[in-house]
Length: 227
Image (spheres, rainbow, N blue to C red):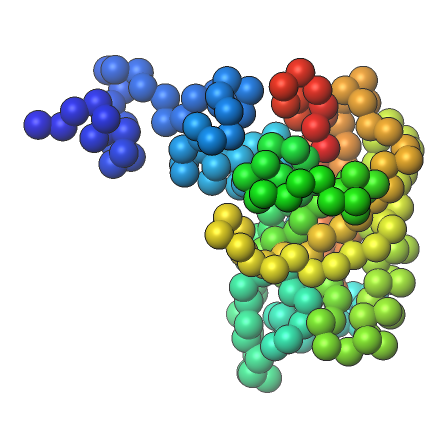
């Protein structure tokens, strides 16, 4: 006999009972310590603070000089995902996927155990995770500086016609809740408010244009906009 509890834990759908897979806005209904593993996964992958990016592949050499054939992440580079192909054989067309996540938002920091470090107080921090080319190098300081300079030119956070330009970027190591990624930092000197309605993150990585929109009115936590 399958009880209601067993059905929920097993991921089975029982339409007649109308049991939702996860409670809507659970982050506002219960304390972080009461969130389930499934709810935490939703928070980090499909929530107001975590959205799938829209990616356009230009199929040409990118602004950082990364040709399409060399697009997969190199060993030791600052990639935004798990692609580790290093051979020189022609590759089939790649389906690029990326998640953009607002790591500086309080509900995520409460799960990660980050007690508002200075950089998160001063910056909006967005983490890009996916099978994308490396945005910065983790081994070559000269290459890293060149890549960062380029990213500052092409990366921005837009709202109501205003642009916030990238302040700096670094690598985000994997943890229990997330694969490795690349974090993009924007100064909080220009405040975002619910009245702005929407913020759009955009950057260029190799031949790829990466964009992601966030509805600010939905990013409310305990009565406040949390970014």
